[in-house]
Image (cartoon, rainbow, N blue to C red; front, side):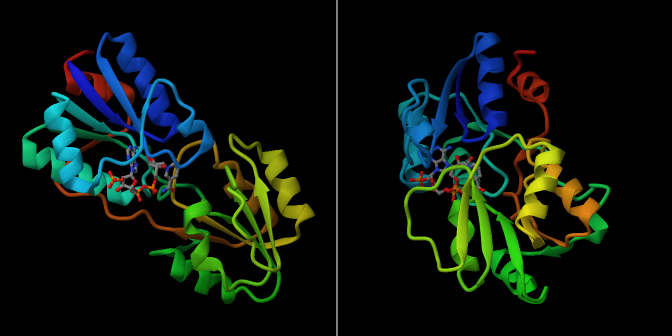
Length: 242
Ligand code: NAP
């Protein structure tokens, strides 16, 4: 069975190994946003050309099933996968790690629908430095903020706004280092996406322990009618390879 695995996350990397170990033919697909992705020898890299391009790829490549294991905030590719699979009759499943909506501190956070609302909410915190952990591609929405430390996995040399500092670092992060970062930078607010998972969750405990307000950007709506599961085992079972 030939499976197209839409990836770009650590969950997708792990799933690729699991599926290959089950003797499935896996084509892992990456957008190519990072140097690591572009250098990948195992994956196919780059966009498909929208819904039509992906539908065409599925047909020409004789793909039997698609697993969408992209990041919860990669809404365009997930929507494209749903539409393309529907149009050519290929099965689709979504592997999605649970978000932080049930996190012990979630009731104390300010939940906002998007990055523009998050930037506005930061403006209400008063003067001081905020830590943005929203990913490189979302930073434009915060350009008006005067005092920012933005932590990103990879910076690609774009100009940095005045009053901003970029911190290139990649999880997993430990509680002690997150507390040290918030203290050293004298952070008065933390902005995060509801990405979920363990690797970047320590910042939430750190903020709670220091009384630093958290602004949390909600996940975009998932495409309707797509089966969603949270584990590799559930994907394997769905593929009939468990
Ligand atoms: P996006 O906005 O949903 O997608 C934009 C376009 O990038 C898509 O229309 C598609 O181009 C291409 N694309 C995205 N993911 C692809 C994949 N896995 N394989 C082939 N093409 C892909 O995506 P994004 O938010 O820029 O994220 C890009 C990648 O980074 C995703 O694979 C995602 O898993 C990963 N990532 C995203 C985030 C995040 O916060 N957004 C965080 C960590 C990792 P075409 O229309 O030409 O097919």
